Length: 371
Image (cartoon, rainbow, N blue to C red):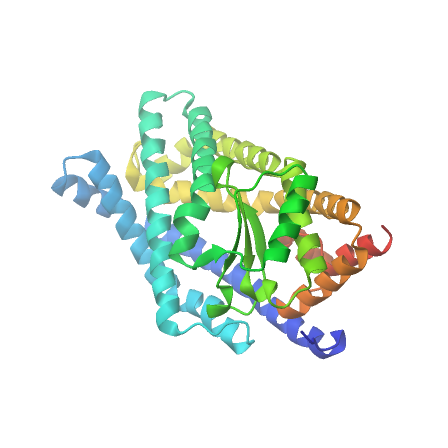
């Protein structure tokens, strides 16, 4: 695969990245405004009262309330989402997906998000009712349980909804990946390839699943355009995350953040609910306030979460380089990925602080060169 030189593509990558940053900021502000308007206008209370008047079962009230709220939000955010994930990707030649297929994918994502969100919210109100004084601890534990279940089910039930994947056909590459997994003491059930190219020109690979669902998945856009050395060092990085227990550390970090956010809701929500004219946290009319809490908490804590993630990524890079010794392949992989994915190789420190959960391409290449 022949890539243009850095000077030929850096401006394009910068332009693409800048638009993505602006859209992310704009979508965050827009979403906050929508929730504030919905709550402040009294629509949240009106909708909740209407549903309670026509439905007896609280579970049904919650399910329909979430469906209407999520459906309305999806419609309001659709133009921005269409531009960000469809028009922009095609404009920069990163996608060849048709509008019809994109809309079908969005519908699938919406259905999955609704089901997962509804399960969590049902659990939230159930725990709130039965453990009113320390519900924030139990709902955080439930979040851990749900996260583990989702990690286990993702390769089996979610990915096949969007991509077709099959056992890797390249026998020599498969043998090399299995040998690498054995060397790094990682158990996998098989190596698969997925048809990434039918939707995007970006490249990716992953090691996912828990227990008997652990598997390697290679995008065809990576398998067909990268050397075996490059693929090996990419997967060594993924296996390193497992060997260094990074998944556990990230889950722990997420749980701590979730617990703190729920504790803040527990301690301070009474005032805001009173201002909104809502009797208690158990009233579904106040759910938008809970969403606003999480959005604001996420904005405040994301730099710390990003920093933790970047440190883990550096550790995974170092172990991958140590195990494989493929320094040149690692560097060429970073170069190729930056061109293929239009990565912002050297962002402004503030951009890195707020947006980057991986080290920059330049930092990763620098690390490899001095390794």
